[in-house]
Length: 85
Length: 168
Image (cartoon, each protein chain N blue to C red):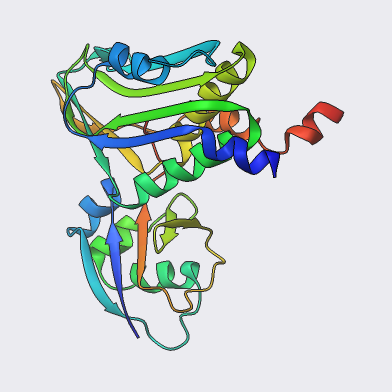
């Protein structure tokens, strides 16, 4: 299953790209598992996801926690805590 | 049914834009040609000229297009459910913003002040912690991302389960 993964703010800077299409490996079922798998893809990913408890996530543009199942998501985003307003 | 009608009559506008906005005009637009509005609360967030005690050159706001609008609209709908609002306007800028320029606007109108004050504060607290925007500051030493503040999390947290809070 291929999904679009998007990165924002310093997660984007550390990964080095704003988005990419990723084939989710079998066995990766939750957002937290996806973060752990991404962290193993190389130095830049390890750096971006070194503190997974700090990273926030959204599935199809709605906030989710790390336990959320990926299910039939079309788009998953990872980003730091928000600082708008 | 009465509740449904109340929600539907609140005029809600959510805009994300690079350009500056006119806060006075946005507030006037919510009261023009109507006599049921008894209170207007307008909050404008402005780019300060310092961060952590050091002067800044500018602020750059990154956002998640699509999700930012959806998230703000969700909270406007939630505010309309909690308080008898007649109108809500939220405008959030993105891109590069210089010190002294406006960043965000929340205008709420109601028949009475309590609802307008509370809804504006609720919306701002949620914008700070749940709307997907990230601030980067430019200072003489370079660029850095603004850290989220635990005080902002606490401010948003207090709006959870208002019934429970009132009972405690």
